[in-house]
Image: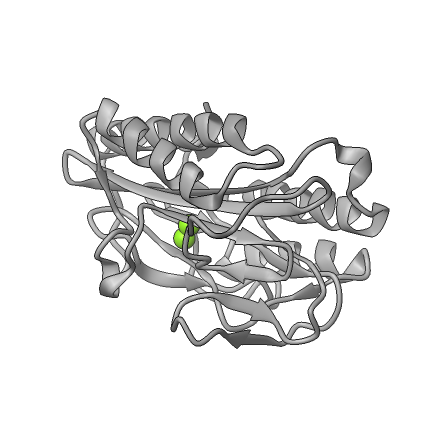
Length: 252
Ligand code: MG
Ligand code: MG
């Protein structure tokens, strides 16, 4: 069942979205060679507290942290660790969800460690295209379109630029729970699926791989990595569908 949100609910979700945007802004500032992914977790935890919000991730099916930090070939759900020291030329995907006053927001970005030119050019392109795929998907989040229009736009951008789309993980509705109906795959057919209506809120989150689409789960039970070891990037916004067009609740 897809729940549509009233204007006052969207206003609350906007506040949650601004919290998580601030978390990722401050965590991104801490991404530098020599930092550990645990340092990023501590920053995220502190910022969530400053806003008197609560992590949507810690304790979710037993996930131990407030932040997912997924480095290089890690696709999503990387667990922050004191042992994982970031090195120049790596990329790290940062994913965070919060709940404030009962309403959730979910947001992810992928950033470089050190200077951009230390990252191999194909990986820089992977990041650019994944972000553009998110923009393309959001552009379709309009009253009267169908869910498949979003999914197809993401897939078309990804595959048109030579990258592959992760199938095992998908975007989702969001509101008073972190994950609600509908599922939002990063692949699909235009004109198919449910009709998009005012008040629907979707977490749109392309995950693109440099090589093949396949992923594997590490023995920690959480971290998803590319099967071929190629790099992966992830961008996510929480987006409300309004009469005026897509409203990106997690945009600062
Ligand atoms: Mg997320
Ligand atoms: Mg999500």
